[in-house]
Image 1 (tube, rainbow, N blue to C red):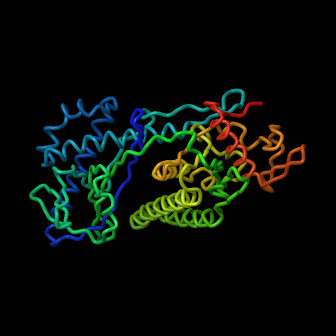
Image 2 (image 1 turned 120 degrees about the vertical axis):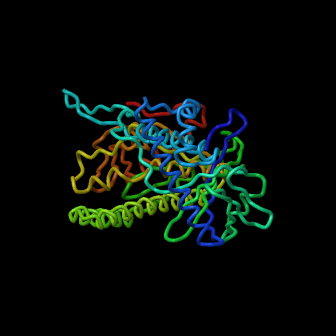
Image 3 (image 1 turned 45 degrees about the vertical axis):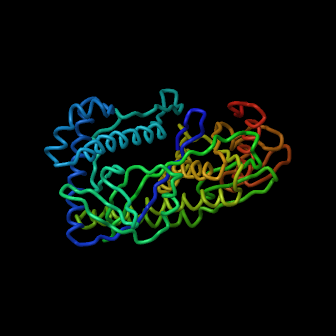
Length: 407
């Protein structure tokens, strides 16, 4: 999702369509094109890494376009797509690095942070999974009979969708872009990017203000303007992650080639499962509160859950949940229904008493998951955090541009 300079914002989604091929030979053509495309992306990535991390597609086209066409036999638009794909991947990694700064203790024992950039990479980004990006109306198109025409290195082929859940995105209100061809579990898929302009969110339309505290014991704790609290438990999530962790340890201990192959599948399975959970939670929040809702979240950039107070064998679960992904999912799902996500400072949101405003570390009991203030206020600590976050959202509505708590 991106802003459009006063005209609203662009909502982007990926439409996933399972397809069936007309013949096995068509599958051979797709596999050949996917492998050549992958090799071209990998080759381009090495060039980017070894030449100052240049991410300007015009400069890359001048240096690499001819080789991409001759060395990998790519069509013109496929070669252009390789350059866009590689630069986009590096920009994504750059954003991810910025979200996870390096933490260290200085000479005085104080914790410091240092923002990471692409120079922190030791190796070029690798493209291991075969895929093929096709440009709309050049390398892929939909026909009047409902089939799709796809380009390969040798000729165009016709494929058919298995289901019709995607038809709403082809009604003319969505702008369709690149189609990725993927093969998984013996099945073929098209992942098509779709964009739609939605109006800007205006403060005056707000009907609900929801503070969302993100964590692990509760993946989300939501507190709204009516004083209602909703807890989204993370207990089963933690248990399953520990099973994944144990299974990985067993496979790593074996160290065989077959174990490494299984380990790769396990990692992919866990990542897919985490993505699904974040989709479910963000959808549940949007379904519960609907349109005209201001979802208020802590800005977790440069924030890392303190691990020095967590047992070493539990630190993996404590720091590695995809909170940023949840934020992204909630942002675009909220925008789709006319709601908005506001990020506020995370400073003191877990230490402040929502009743009297006193800020003290000692008032939060991590072991009992309770917040107790000298004023008499007592509550679940995640709920107290959500209440403080919700209050910052109300301050924003009342005219404070960047609300935060200070001692």
